[in-house]
Image 1 (cartoon, rainbow, N blue to C red):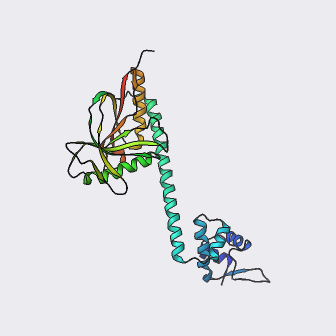
Image 2: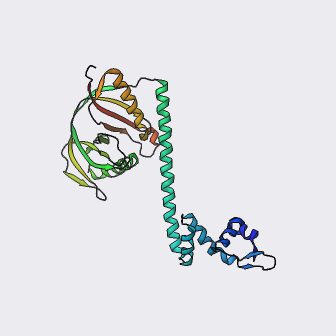
Image 3: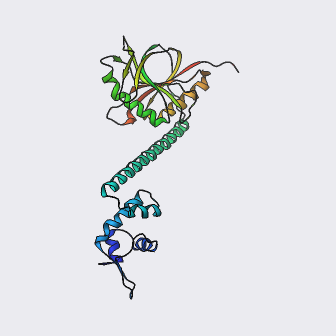
Length: 280
């Protein structure tokens, strides 16, 4: 038998927490000396305490924990619940990491504006071409990037030797609305192609013609794909300064997407259809 301090060291929980659990009737000492008031715990109680602590880590309330403990869940059931909680925590960590990348990217955009470096904008015609693609309405840019990665892995094998151009994103959404990002992602192709190719899951690549852009303002972005808004900002400033008007949503051409290296080595050409702005 162990005094409360000794047991707290063995269980790696505070004596204060043990007293609180006793107070609410969740976990009590094996024996309490009626004369001295000393609490004594047994090592045999550790599995019971570990169930309580595991349930707490799952985010259950104390009331829910009491019910779970009373149900005497099996080790496999607890392991399954902990595995689910682990996945939830990992997802939360990924979300926070994405938020951090966005903050860092916006800070870099502020630096761009402060430095005042003129962007290297190129005006050019973009010809019509065949396009092997899938179109989806996606909730956020993270989902867009996941779709890009999925097609990068699946399409070259499914295309059966077709000559593929650089992976291209066509932005159909007239505005940036999270939850409703209408993107078409695919590969320009040349030569005869099948009408469609079934990918894993419910996705199917469809063949269509990507229309020409008589005149596009283009700017090459080198760096993380999550930073392409920097290119859009620089391009918008240049167009405004030089008297050009955007005609509608544009495209992103993934000129280089590292397979194994860091995303910071990506090269993306942003294309916006333009015309001369009407005189004020």
